Length: 315
Length: 281
Image 1 (spheres, each protein chain N blue to C red):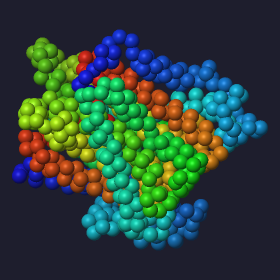
Image 2: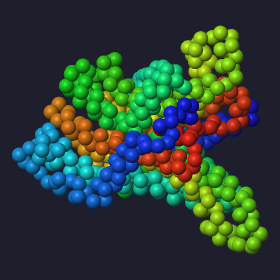
Image 3: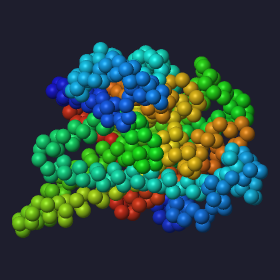
Image 4: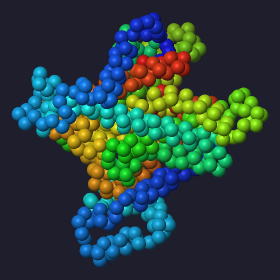
């Protein structure tokens, strides 16, 4: 239990650190935020001073920092310079679209990579080599190119899918596929590796001795074993889904946190940028904590150890 | 991927590997001496042929301003390599220094560097790079720094672990017994011996850094407008997909071919110098 308390403390620390980094980013940025917000070349000086006082920007930095942390705890992420709305409500409107995209991309990658790994683990050398080559290409291809190609072929040429935006399932298909391709490449590598390792374990031999068929051995025993290394990749996966959303939503001009983030960075709308980044860091830290705890349940040998990262997988 | 290495994959002539080295050599040539390969200057405008498909005059077609896509792709090699490899080198150097400092410095410093690394790792994927670009503003140098920042934590962790191992080794103990100063021991023994695993790790992260660089450019956060960067060219081509497929194909193909080549060559280098079985292919 001490290990769990330590992990929770570390998670809280990391979220605080991310929030502090975001505060520093907000204040280290060159240029006057009030001028950025007003957008005019030369706004009247008294108006600038009034807004500065309203935002508390005339207070000492330490006080601003404490006030910022206090607002953060209450869920107040500040106001957007450009969108004329509280950041929290902007995020609330956009989070659904991004969650739908991330979950469908993730689900699709799992559904495709499991059969690929099972079909090629330790057998069918020709197919296996073909699939490993595909995986390499999938990992090495930038998602924005996949998105542009799919748009070009399936939306503009064949007109099977909407060209831009598009609500509901038809508008979700191409973005989800785009997001899933890179993930599939990594998942199927890691799963096949795990299945191949599991097939050499004694429990597989004993299952075969009991008369299990090859398919049953792979599905019921080896796959379950192979799922654990996949769990250790969860941090990488969440990161890929979140940053993938930025690119994919921009390619497909789709609603969502990612596109709002990309637009806010270009417009230097820092409250939106830091709001999204802090939210993402917090979600990421909590999910990592959950996975770490799950991991100890799944494999008690690992209690009290940080989850290992399989070699050769970039962050 | 150790399970069933076929005989051909293990030894002898491997055409795919040669192809990867060839592609990488061409990309490096294009980056170093683009005018040797390109058929047009990257900014030359052909008013007669905007948004045209491939032709003998314009191998990859032209963009909306009538600029030659092939030549722009050739000139773009430089930017991808500068941003991707620049960010990787930055992460390697800073990571090595901080990691060794963390392993050998006072306990408080070790703790500070360790926690700072934890915080950097809290920003998933590209988000740290995006935050850094938001602060510094767009541009090639800032994109390089941003991607370097998001790559550095892995290097710090690895260098620290490696330095701790090296410090316990026989030759460092011998140097201590011989009365060499700590500074000399670190410069002569600890740092040089902690670096090789970092180089191996760099072969893993370089491909990702190149993709991240062109992704930032695609989002409009990389080098400024007329620069022929592959991601930025794709972003421009995005608006002409109904008329010009070539604009959507070739810059992306260049990124993918480069990254595949970097990954394959990286795996091959790891196999040669580490003697470990290849991960990936």
